[in-house]
Figure 1 (spheres, rainbow, N blue to C red):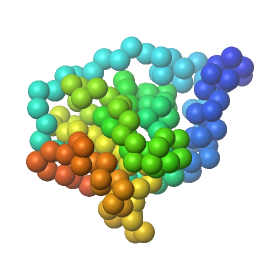
Figure 2: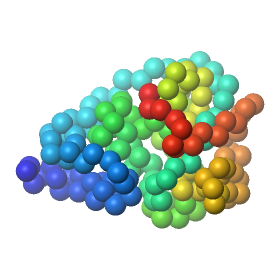
Figure 3: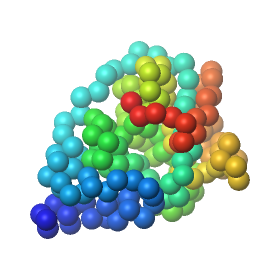
Length: 161
C-alpha cells in the first residue's frame, strides 16, 4: 500500500467506512486511481438557467462539503462534488451552515437525466423520523437558495449522474 497516498486520504477513508455502510470498499485497494480521480481537472458543463432546486437528505449522519467532494470525485469518479450547496448539521460544519460546493454556473450532478435545470442541495441527516422531509432547521437554510419549485428527493430513490 502506498503510505503517502493513504495518509493523504486517511480521514476521508475512515469517514467513508464508518458512515457509508454496505458499500464495496475494494476501491481503497487502488489508492493511485482513487487519488487520480480526486485530483483530475474539473470539466463541467455550464448551465443557462434553473427551474428546480433538488434537495437530497441522506442516510449519512455526518459530513460536510469537503467530505462529499471527496466521495463524489475519488469514489464515484465525478468531475466535482454533485451538490451546489451542502447544509451542515453541526457534526463537521455548523448547524444549518450553507457550504458552497459546485459553482452555481455549472450543471449539478445527482439526479439521473434531470441535472440540466437544477440546483443541487444536500442536507446532512436533516430528516424527519421516517426520512420523508427535512426538519425545519434545514428548510430555513434552504430558504436562502429557493427557486420556483422545490423537489424533495430521497437518497434511496435517486440515481447518480
